[in-house]
Image 1 (cartoon, one colour):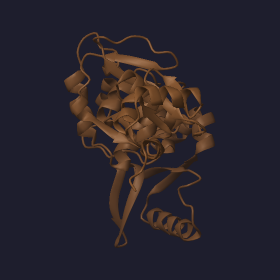
Image 2: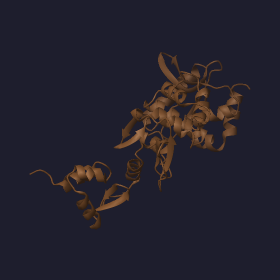
Image 3: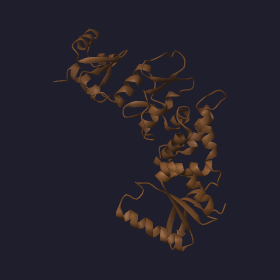
Image 4: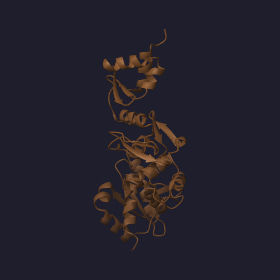
Length: 302
């Protein structure tokens, strides 16, 4: 026996965070009158024009975001997109979405950005929700987060392999024009990153790099590779001419005993080879940035 319209609709809603649209109900075989009847009986709850939640379905961030995307007919963007893409771990204060400027209007409970150059062909899907692609997200999110947060997002996206730095550069160039808010912050950041430079691997490394920049110190080489006693070694930050290297001691950097032992053996090899290590913890970088920069400056003889 084929499933009933209600069963088909329930299956659809389960795959879409407990949500469905009136068009989905019709496609599953329910009439408009039957849908209204389900609403009266509490089997479906309106959450926006033409958007419903299955009665009893748990509420959550993904559900609110998908409902917003359906309401505005636009993808998640900015901070919501960054969270969906895995390059930011804090949700937007309200679902954040983008729509074509023409015909857009206000939507309660949502942050809606209007764009005249929203290319729907570059929209992708994450967790069943339409979302702006990584390069476009990084260009857009610059207008709603601090420069430090933006830099962390760029490095994390490149390190995770979801976007190339050149893709972000190309998207910035395509969208940049006088009077466009969003393009400016990412442009300033991209100009500060040397072409081809590897992305920092952690938020702590990004913070250390920003401290060095803010202090006006020479910028180190990132992800510097060398051979020591027949072993290939990679350094987070290095000043090869001065034989000085910097590393961030984050809690997750050496999570196992074997990793801890390997790291110490690696450092000993470097010291014997004449390198001087400088290691900084998150607390030092976060609360004592001047001490960090002063230590680096002293090691460089500045």
